[in-house]
Length: 129
Ligand code: ZN
Ligand code: MN
Image 1 (cartoon, rainbow, N blue to C red):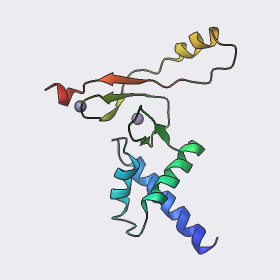
Image 2: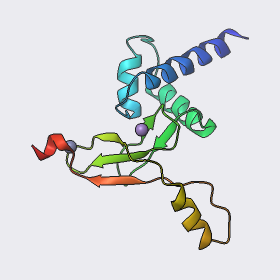
Image 3: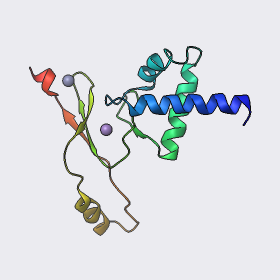
Image 4: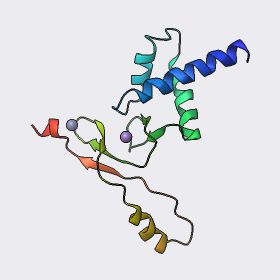
């Protein structure tokens, strides 16, 4: 492996590890701020590129919401998310994944359903206080 390839994979590994060790569903900027403590010369573009690559490979999840910055998640199993419309916090919603939703969708769809994603909206408990 060449020096550049090694550097690239080390950066990608550091980004993945950072994401795995947190549960706040960070934006690319949030990861960049954190990862710079470890790799001071990394650029925001590199962080973006690697997150995009990891998401395309299915190693991480990309959570997109209307008009807001993309969020990333190191947990790739099927699970639901909640987004606070007040503070923008993204959290996991501990609701059992509903496989029957896939079956219901399959019944009304000519193609093949392979899964679904749902994001719940509302006000988080901190903002309700
Ligand atoms: Zn909130
Ligand atoms: Mn999550």
